[in-house]
Length: 493
Picture 1 (spheres, one colour):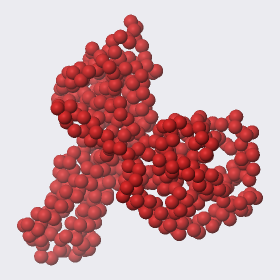
Picture 2 (cartoon, one colour):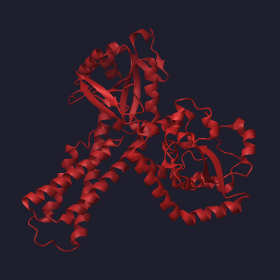
Picture 3 (cartoon, helix red, strand yellow):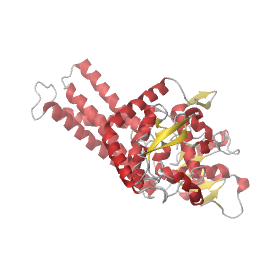
Picture 4 (cartoon, rainbow, N blue to C red):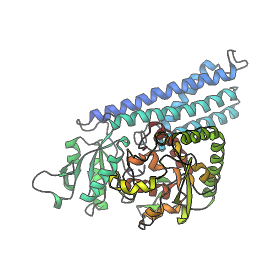
């Protein structure tokens, strides 16, 4: 899940690579050209909106520089700023938040530079025009990049989008782990096409690791990459890959057009917690401890409760309609209260709209053999205990709206791990118990990544990743993705 899983260490690329890789490079260049065209269109619209909003259909009076020159100049300067801040670098396109940060930084720096230059040289260009154009353009660029990324992700998931062809190098166990990680998120754009393992593990005949062909040993990594048309060599842990051999591998890949990336043994740690400091020629990676208290936690709690209060006020008519529908659909109470375990192992009652028949718990024993998920949870796609209106509420996650009360009371957060049952917590081991270091959430990484379609192991992995790496920015991203997950009804049953 982490965007920092692969740490690039790009060799100085020559103008052309091996002839077996032109298709991937062509697809990459086509995507970048499409981004340039898209950005240009957005900026033209932004400048037009700024002009119309400031001047309407009137010609600006007293302008020292005609706007027929200012407008194209602003668009051109904006594109140059995007290029200068490496917003078209293939290493940030299509995955992670760095692309969005660079676009915002390029826009803000340009706006600041124009403001300073206008003040110093006393250029008579309307501040209103520039301000509106900057605001509309920055927002438009971010939305356009998001749309382009989603299109790329869909193409990659179908196997037709621009992706990196990866040769994985390392011990057998670490190669299999990295292959599984990369394939878990195909939209990230890393397509494994082969593997190189230590010489001692090679058999006299060709072999495979799962469905990944073993194409060589550590002695011929560059040749193996050329043979299978890989444009990226991903090195994972191995006792035989010493620092000297890894440095020599980087030298061997210089001028080949093949990128070298290193997958550290330290995974599931987000970028903001990682800092690289060179000490005695060694790039030491410093990992900051997770933050479970402090000012940011206070801000998160304030945002949670404020948002929950506003949401309850706005959704009150909808809540009343849902309550009436439940009452008419089946006998029993409208709300269902269940004991869950929250932060620090404290139990509390979580509120949900009732979606099952009143004797659902009594029927669970009879249905236990039909559990469709692994781990400690019970999930069943066509659960006979669910009522007619309950299926509709679960499809759109409307049954969870009463949990806003739990958020308002400080028992839950808007974003966090799934609130577990006491019976689940009783069987937790030491690692899984770390889920209880933060408040459980109404939504989280588990919900935006597949919900009930996820295995128990993947769900726990996502929860632990959130616990270790939470941030307010990540919360906003998860809340945004939740709307898409709810609309598409992914894993809802």
